[in-house]
Length: 487
Image 1 (tube, rainbow, N blue to C red):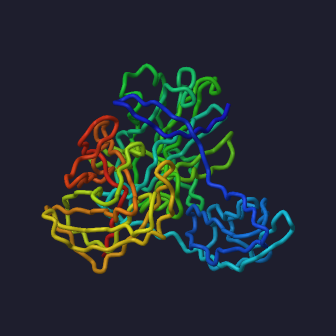
Image 2 (cartoon, rainbow, N blue to C red):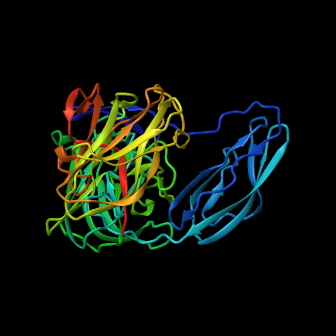
Image 3 (tube, one colour):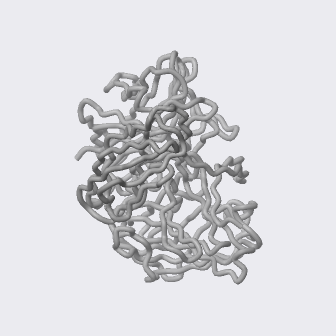
């Protein structure tokens, strides 16, 4: 039985109904008779201890292709896939590295390219009061195409939620998301799951150590009513004390005597199209799902983001409390159809220098128009993102990507004032997007998601709250967006 599954979630009311589907992105065959030519001219920079992925592209040649290094060495921890040409891994060294990449096609024609990659030290993150992770940004900050689950067992799978603490103090309890009663997600009685809080090993890989600072045993999960069986609370008998800025791991291990029969899954947010960082504004080191299969080495699950909340004894909370993406309820951005995030600043002034949004381009070549305006509609700034920066897909099979719009000046958003972030496009082109749902109805606090606003869509000149799962005018979703916050 396969121990790791992935799925997009369709959630009706409080009970999940699952549609399974795992997929990857691979290079399609190229039947051109011309010799191959590598079109990649540069590699994106990376950070030590941060997951890296850089696909190489080519034109011409006859598939299948064989990729290799002709000379030079990649940073320790990175490797090139001989079939796809993608450079992936987690760099364990800092510096400038130069390599010559070679590709050979089935006619034995070849081409090479000289490329350089810079790996820098992973800088410590700084705090952001209304954000779900430790970065200076304002907004939801994550992208999600749905939910994906990782089984704890039955093939000896152990799972870690790696996170960087934002607060110091003792953790009274933790809230996690499970789906324990669906085929493929769970088996038998759901198993007996030992949950431990472990320290981080401090290496560039940032794996959990064997040092346990708290533990809890999950059992008889299936006997709980809904929604408690899905949104499960761990209450530590001896609360662990965390230190702000340090990395920790919440580790899930199946200790059932029959783990191949009795097991369950933890559920995470999943982004299908990702680069670096994997999830919007969140540093990969600071929030990740790690998997150890059959007692083997830990490895990050690319595109996965833990869903969790930590409740401290002093009353503060932190975590990532977005449950899912409403991928089944996209709205078009074209002509009189537009979308926006409406938000009212809480806390201190917010100085913003750019904005990133996650959208799909499904038709046309007109730019995506971005407007930042006051609540009365008066303009603060308007600009556009070229269509070429958002890969073209289709409405039947949309692909969502992060696109960034640099503001021409640093704007100060004032506490108590309401603003709109509008996305528009010409009627001859169509973009689309969808919100991510906050878990506020299931115990997640507004410290774990963007608590200042919600997503709306325009239709024929009127604005509405989002419609999803058969419910209209919802205010529990945010656009996938974030402002970069200036010092």
